[in-house]
Image 1 (tube, rainbow, N blue to C red):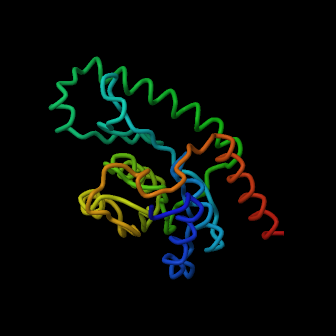
Image 2 (cartoon, rainbow, N blue to C red):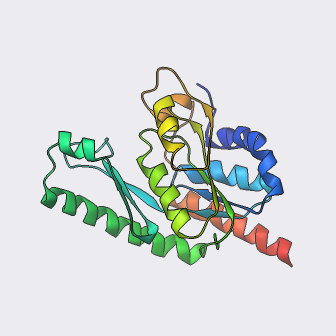
Length: 218
């Protein structure tokens, strides 16, 4: 295993990202698993922590495979080749999108009540996940923050396949990845502990970081 857990991955990424400290950066975690990683990065950089809300879209008969993603600000990103190979009808796709849109709205309502969105206009944004597989959600996250006014986007992850990194370099200004295993089959292969991150944990981390920021502003 490459990382003990998400906190370990975040600390190791933070060391690599210390040069970003000189900029006016905002750190955005991808819920849920990206938030513990992002929290360590934000803590090391003394930067605000927020989330960027993106959900992958899957099909009923392939729930483990992403064919696209939806994000805040009406972002839609789909793999047209994957949809064609799966012979997805417009009705099936519309139903899958609707389900994801409802989950996205519920999550936004809950998390934004705890952590109001940090203004991104004119700022450098670090988008952090616990790993990248297909790159669908990461790519959609890049689109979201650009629509919100970010001027420079850095996509950050502990692990990703080489081909996903190459594709995402066209969507972010920088892609920072610690490990690109030659034999990649799942993000979890890089972790000793890849247990699920709960909604409660995400909410706790956001609340803690917000409290620290507010205390520092007094």
